[in-house]
Amino acid sequence: MLLLPDPVGMTENDPNFVTALARGLALLRCYQPGDTLLGNREFVKRTGLPKATVNRLASTLVALGYLRYDAALGKYGLDAGVLALGYAYLASSGLIALARPHMVAFAQQYGVSISLGKRDRLEMVYLESIRSHAGSSLVLGVGSRLSLLSSSMGRAYLAAMPELRREALLRDYAQAYPEQWAAEGETVRRAIQTAVELGYAGSFREWHPAVHACAVAFRVAGEDDPYVMSCSASYQSRSEADFDAQLAPALGAMVGRLGTLALR
Image (cartoon, rainbow, N blue to C red; front, side, top):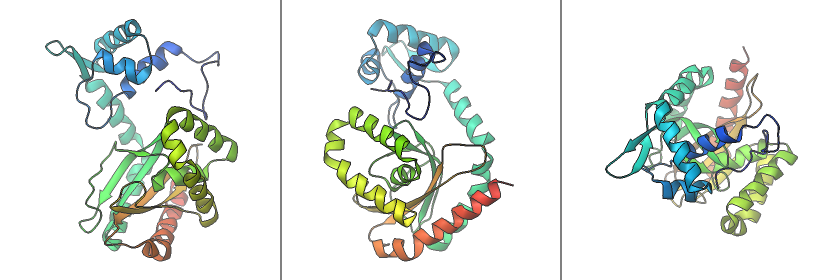
């Protein structure tokens, strides 16, 4: 269900909340990596909205250039309007431009993949990703989404949240994904507590069976929500001890420099 209120923003009961706009954006959020075309049936299933509402919203988004309609298949695909919004965000982000050379140097020095991300609802999204040839064989790029629970990036984000906001996020996650929460909830709580104590979060073959990773959250001036930087490698090339002793401290030092530079 994609229409869950965001616990760190306004809710549907807020007088400034525009439900029609939220529903239109929920349709755009239905698209996941690998999705090319979606029909009304998929929209209804992923949003919980009535079919008639979905049809009106989709038609409006087509008229505005955010969706395109394939008449032969009766389905919709993302159109250039969405790309324009995403590109405008990436191009306007001074932090991404500032971070990129530091990320390249880090990936080359330590032979890992390194990524910058932020939270989007109940997932983490890559804003930039640099992959070294010696790093993980798992290829993820800008726009890739990761689990808020099992990824080091998600755990670092949760550990950086004030307790009340963190608990609100976890409640929403448990409501949206009850089976996953039942299986992973206690493990995640322990991992968050460890991340709070250590200053970084780890995920060692938990998010992906072939990947070891760690992540550090940091804030920049003028933005309330933290960014997260993560580094990852094949579990065969980098042990958990390597992350604890070398990679996590180096990553923490790098984001500390970035945070200072971004304040200038």
